[in-house]
Length: 376
Image (cartoon, rainbow, N blue to C red; front, side, top):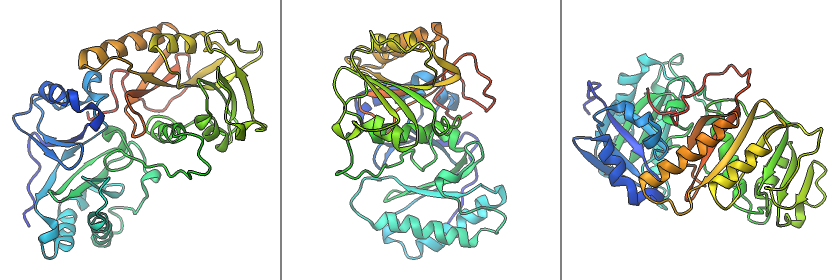
């Protein structure tokens, strides 16, 4: 097996969610690659004319995950004798000296019902970790990673093996491909929105710690209570607002205060103080951000805002860009600074935006407000 040297201008493996299929040609065109190959499900292998374009907001928000491809083996693993051993030996030769914090292997077809490649990925990771020098890599789980330290990520499928080193933050996710599947018990789940919030809080750790236990959240557009339930399960106190009642299961939660009414007319109590605001309201995005800004006065300095930007009738790339520009400009006038944005696995025609109040003493590294934490 040949181990190709790192190209002067490396290829990139990018993942664009299928929900944006209609604008994928425009996204690819703006990256201006000399060639582009579709791999697996939602993945594209290309060499952008300017790799920095991957971190510019107008494109980065559509790229769920990215990886510089520093080693590839286009092959048919299923029909190859000794694939695991050959691939593991090559990974050790190429990457052991660079001492990645860990090795994680994902699938180019993550939703496939064929378990063969899932087992192959597990076997390859296990064998590679055996071969790495003990000081070269640690067998960390994805959640234990330092978001700013380089990880050896690999994607595996019938098309072959594609690998590279980059920090989870620059990849835009702790997991290979950026997806963290949230396990939900149907008998206990109020709505899928709980999984969306769980994933958002997981993603947040790429940029800053989540609010501490017992922090006070203001939730706008709470019904039926999927996100409310997730916050309560994490030990938070919640003031929830919606015109529709919450699920009866939440009726006697001691850390919940519910106000039945419109977020546009809700008034915070005079002594209210929030560590975070969560907005998943339906309707026009301008109205939703206006409601957040009106209620942001009780937000602590450096307080967090997680905002679901519903794209509504915006379907083309320029329409979505204008919507983003409008919402982020309005947020800025109210003292909210955008520090991250992405399309989560559990988002549909919407994005999750992360703001913090401008008066902040938070000292952890942050991404540029025009970026979705893409490669530098």
